[in-house]
Amino acid sequence: MSRPLYVTRPLLPDLGDVNAMLGEIWRTQFVTNGGPFHEKLESALKETLGVPTVELFNNGTIALLVALKLFGLPPGSEVITTPLTFAATAHSIHWNGLRPVFADVSPDTLTIDPASVEKAITPMTSAILGVHVYGTVCDVDALQNIADRHGLRLIYDAAHAFGTTINGQPVAVFGDASVFSFHATKLFTTLEGGAIATPRSADHEMIYFLRNFGIKSEEEVVSIGINGKMNEVQAAIGLLNLPKAPVEREARTRLRAKLDAALSGLPGIGLQPVQSGVGQSEQYYPVVINADIFGRSRDAIYTALKERGILSRKYFHPICTDFAPYRGFPIVSTRNTPYVSEVKSQVLCLPFFSGVKDEDVEDIRAVFHGT
Ligand SMILES: *Cc1c(COP(=O)(O)O)cnc(C)c1O
Image 1: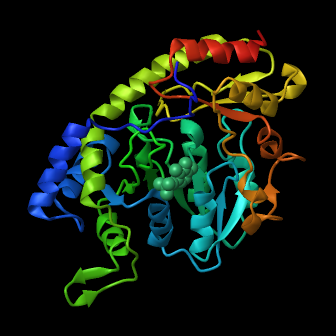
Image 2: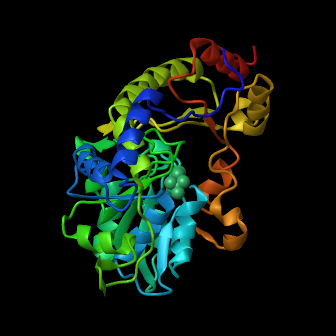
């Protein structure tokens, strides 16, 4: 039993394999700017993510910034998103000179609620930025339907949805673009890294320019751009981790079954929904603790786990509208009180990675059962 037990642990390749690839990078001195490992990882990810355009980035946040830039959304226009997400989602909208508009989440999935999205639409709305939060997928059909009817772009923050499928289709075929993060906390990692994936091969060129200062040739800058390039060391880690990711995912699927067995049937404890037809990414294991029914609060459970050296995380509490830049922004909801305002005090992500042992599950069980 290793304590503290963190909520996750980075997937790391064998150090000998890393050293061999570093040797290759040192030999060729091709360290960044679309080197051979970068090109290899990019094409491998086109296979894995099942879409014609995959562009690698130095991190997921820069990829989000560029994905929003890609569609030429009118300056100052509104992008509807969820407040139950990592800060980067809202920041990427604001940083682009667009206005984040927060819509409530659905009680069953904790993803953005389509009816609240519809209610949030104004003549200034230009896009919807959905988040497949914890690996639970958005209602992609309802959101696409809304986007089509109102002429909006539909972009997904798919940072938690690497490898997700919906009715056999890769998650990145939905919407106009999906953004992945390969940060160390994500199941598939390049230490820091990310990607934009889109279902159209034509997007490749524009993303390519936006990622690298708009440079087309030695003497041509054809658009604005940023430095979003992934370097060769990151790409090498990615190539080594790519075959390891499905193995890690399978281990987490087995862990999920054990945690489900330990926690299911407890009154007031809600587990992540099983979505029919969805191949789970296995990014997080969130539980929703309703103190009125369960008798103990999320924070009480968090503390009790911590006393045993089990470090759960209150993702994503506080929510975006609690952060200084977005304080006072309303949360548009079809309910009187937005559901997200309640659930933010109830959600807890438990340790979820292949290194979590049966004894750890037993300890978690004991904390929840109060034994
Ligand atoms: C991890 C994450 C990102 C991007 O993070 P980076 O650390 O920049 O790769 C964006 N959105 C969500 C929901 C995330 O969890």
